[in-house]
Image (cartoon, rainbow, N blue to C red; front, side, top):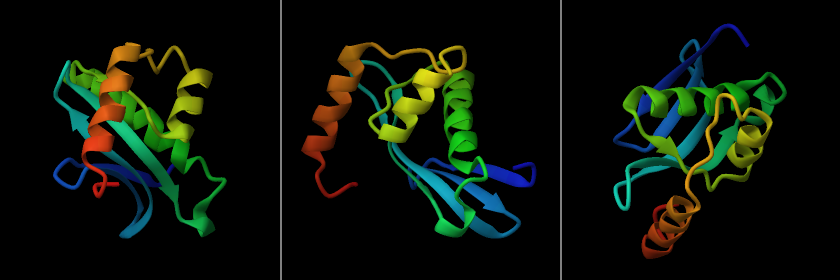
Amino acid sequence: MSDIEIRDDRQAGRLEAFTGDELVGHIEYFVLAEPARALVPVHTIVEPEHEGHGIAGSLARELYALAAREGIVVAPLCPYVVKWAERHPDEAPAADPALRQAALEWLKAHPGRF
């Protein structure tokens, strides 16, 4: 989808995809601080009328690019991002399993967040 704009709302923990002024999808994430900094995507959501246009893939690609620009890794918990990363290993370096475990523990400690 060529007319998509992706914006990072770090404060809200959302990477958002827009077509014009319309929000068409997003990835909800948090930033893990310990044991190492990582972006941790939890959910990927695309509005039903926009499914099948590559929006989720564009969001996942931008999440990994954002992490690379910041010099950190992505430790995905979102099933879609996990599968996307498996299909794109050249763009999505695997995170240390300890980071994924730390992310799961953070999520358990913050049950109302997601």
